[in-house]
Image (cartoon, rainbow, N blue to C red):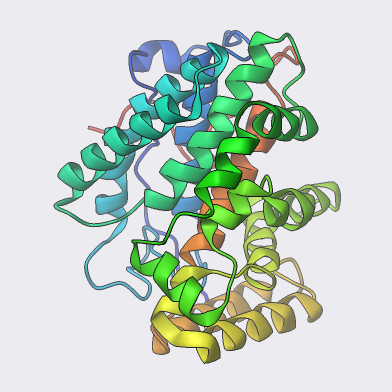
Length: 320
């Protein structure tokens, strides 16, 4: 039986933008660091608000996690909202990779301070931060904020540095698990300009929209299409190779049966969520790429003569 969705807090406003301005209907300037950063914050909120999603934290429950909930993620989002603006500005200025890395490390420290040492968004600080920088570079060059342009800017400006970064010995638990099991790491995905994001997550999200799926169903299908192919170090860390393989097969089976938009799809999604929780599995890497796909979808609307829509079911005002 599907669960009623609780009232959801509003997404955080971008740093430096008053909530009254966020509620105004006027178009935001296309491609500014503020617009790119705001889009990142809202995209992360959209991922958080999605429920059900297998094993992951939402405003409904903690998923497979005992140490964090939706409120923890909101504190993290408030701590990070200025970061996405700042790294988009660095990208627009053509900053070298060490400057981006230092910006990300400072943001991670703020996240950990806000959450009491809990890792809520480390992966997004890395992946979505890089995309914001690439978006800033594309906008500064006068390019449309298309997925292809953003990906090309990422490769052109920081591809060499990311190739060098992938050779560093891993130091975090996810990277160590990936190395132990012979999996691709988040560093590998970034060095190759996020192939799973651009070849699987985003196309599935766009295809769901084109078929007329509601936003939540399109996002859930995109998430599961990602789980089905990504070497998700969070799954590997929690469940080993067997857990990763089980999660991939479960995601493929869900999509093969018709996905979230089929009759009974929501009930099936809740059942899948419970199965992930029973195994303590949480596809955090896939969740990061879903947020990145939501960001790409959102920034693609900038400059098209309409304000970027607020997250579904949410007021654009600051939560109190």
